[in-house]
Length: 247
Image (cartoon, rainbow, N blue to C red; front, side, top):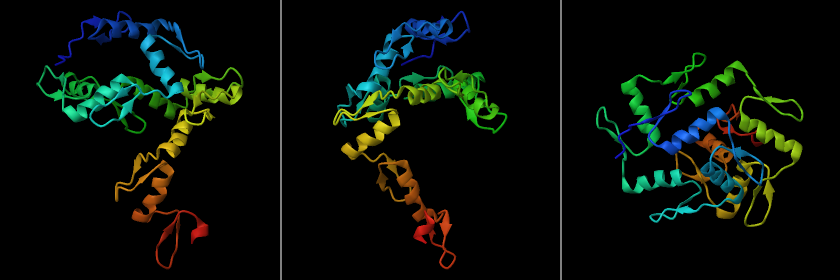
């Protein structure tokens, strides 16, 4: 069981960790030291484990396979979290009340109830966040702050990942390659959609009838059959359609 004790404290911001290696990784976020660079796309990382995980987005490698159901994962933390759905293990225990959790994030949220730290509520829209980083990112959607500027054309973005994706429109970089046919893609979401055409995976399920679809847009169109909330409604019978030509 994990007790939640965090003896390693960051001198810069006071954040505490239960493991020395995690503390070292965190301290690099202040120094901005990123010694590990991806040979494929040039993105730099503060620690070796981060670059290994990132490199799998290019290779599509999933080395962690569940012995119980065969599902594979590219990240060890996702794999361990998945395994607990089979074992029922709850390694994170609250010292305050003894309640145990299978997920670290759920455990951290629970601890906030005792400590009074967070949650973080947006004054603009009332949305609540348990992580300060996500909260600050969300605030930019209201403030319109765009601190990340493209060096090529000057276009500014709220988040560094959005700028990175945009910069590929200048470089025509396609870092995501299909292992089956070798077709390359600019965006991770594009290769994920493409690979489903090979695997037949249908991750988007209708909550009403459990019918599954490859793309989210397909499940949204399908939901109109249940809700009747089509953009075009025939006045005679009230039936809804996704486009005027179907009326």
